[in-house]
Image (cartoon, rainbow, N blue to C red; front, top):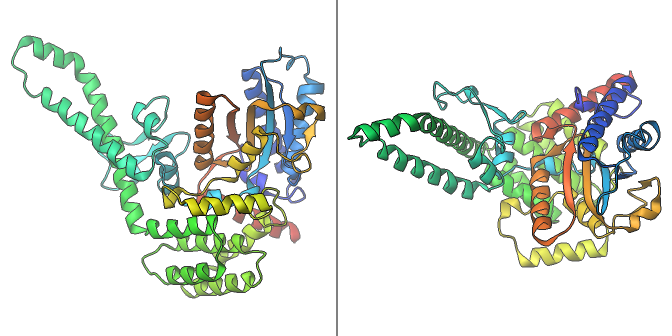
Length: 433
């Protein structure tokens, strides 16, 4: 989408721009479904005008305007197109990421699988500029893109060790046959050298950034806010972290936003949030940045959301969360699960509420369990959600079950998400006057 922030705007702020963004979403979805040879059942998030509009346009296109074009022989099992809104889960794009692909996108920047190493002063070699990090072209990246930070370090060390062994075998050339073999393998050797250098450079930059910005401490607190509820303790912990001069301002702001989202409807939550905002302002944070806290609540607060973001709406959700806390977690930095995982689980079990996620067309078909779902997140998806979908698909391949294809208007990191919130605030302010 040319201007993806349009998907965050209320319909009356920029009708033409929003219409163009929605049309582009419909074009992209139509192209994907035609390539898959599918005419799916369509469900959408009722609370989102953008989701509803895109779902209706897709239904008209597939069942009225171009019905013959989408008239495919039905495959085994039902396919569902599920149109959701990014603003139903504002927590996932705000969290520090700890898997390879997501870390690179969050801490360095990844655009269409391209990474600009020229910005990493003093760390990239002279022949490295813009490099590709794509699972289709880089076997190491494909294998380790969802690895956590610790496992990634071990994997890169193994890659370096293997290259050192290969380098030593090329130093002992004592015959014409060995010379010929070296010349034949030289292009592959050069390619492997660049490959190793790329991943070592990226890992080195990630390590430097994590240390400089105190991301370990910030991330542990983010996960606590996302996954548990203890308002008084969290307020005290945040107060200490905000006063830490080594912690980056952006991490402090995200922590306050997460606190505001978690305790938005708690008695005393607004008062404690304002105390944190005053503290952050006194430490030099600009008014425009502080305003994004309220901006996130206006765009994605409890009154506008459909899903059970913090697992507190039903008794079963609260009980499940309590059981999880008693069991403990394997990794404190990756305990959060995106709301999308819960939504897809409910869809696979036939428990996704029709009242919240209506079906267009023949509602009787919703009783059938889908074997394939195409998820489209209006406003953008994240690499954490991509990893969750990849894990679901691996499980489906082993045990049988629902296959998932994930798409969205863009892939967010925390910066792009907050930039779009700021764009939304500016557009609403301009529309007001």
